[in-house]
Length: 102
Image 1 (cartoon, one colour):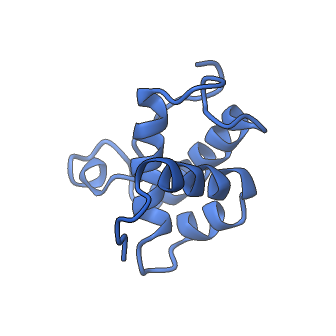
Image 2 (tube, rainbow, N blue to C red):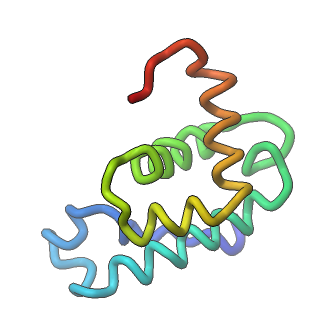
């Protein structure tokens, strides 16, 4: 997808494996969040009008950051991006309704 370049910067194993220089994970992760927000735009789903495996992958990463307790820069970035918050809410409403997520 144009404009959506995965860097895997938000994953701790990238630091452990030496693929991401120390200090660059958060800036790269923030760029990834901005790219994902731009790719989603005002659509319900990333690739258009129906959910895809890309939506499942995006939700799994976003929800782990967004629903987790520590207020890291990536969490604040997602919280300040209305379309990504709405996207996570939409996935939870459609697929996880009635399941306790806390």
